[in-house]
Image (cartoon, rainbow, N blue to C red; front, side, top):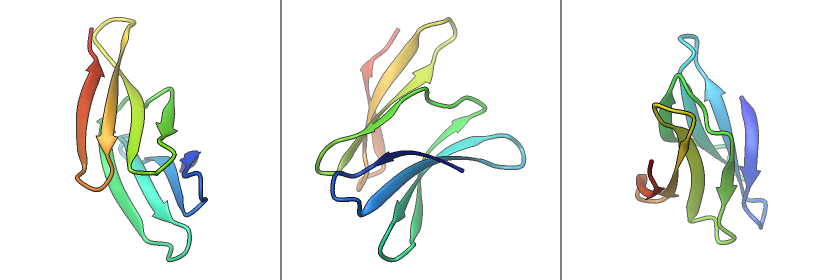
Length: 88
């Protein structure tokens, strides 16, 4: 597990975790309760960058494409829905 971003108020930590099969997931942990949520699954690739909006409600991340380019997504943390912002 590798922390990659925090909310501005420090109440939530976002981390990338790799399971035994080497699949990568984006997790969110509440620092007050310790509750952990799985937000996204990336298969065998991981984002190079993960950024959290100041209000903590949206997470931006990149994902690999078939070539060297990377797509960019915005994830609505509450809804669990990722929308593409840049696609190659």
